[in-house]
Image (cartoon, rainbow, N blue to C red; front, side):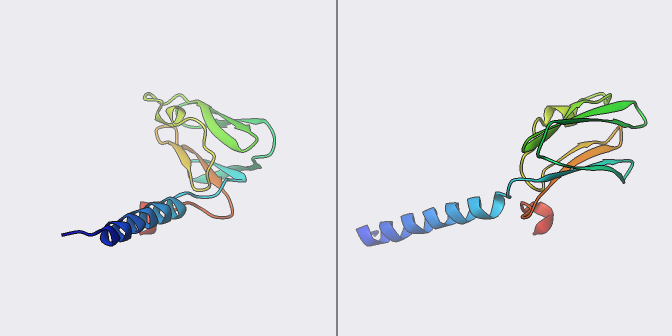
Length: 119
């Protein structure tokens, strides 16, 4: 049999769990982008102004766009276009991988977000 005080404690505990989850899983805003081709770093750029890069891979050229605070893979010759469909990346720790073309884009910042590999 639950009383009013019991419900208050359960509600406070649920709010605390949700708040801690949001705090732990939300990384900070990214400030740099690291572009790799075939596992090697090709370019490191700041997310402060508009830039565009072309990176060559085994299948062709991957187009990367950078705007203030965000970056994305705009075009890629991979068959399923999964890295293009990821859209704009903004948070530290986010990455877009074009595996068939061996090109990747990673956002880095001061505080990376946790992922399943961190646990």
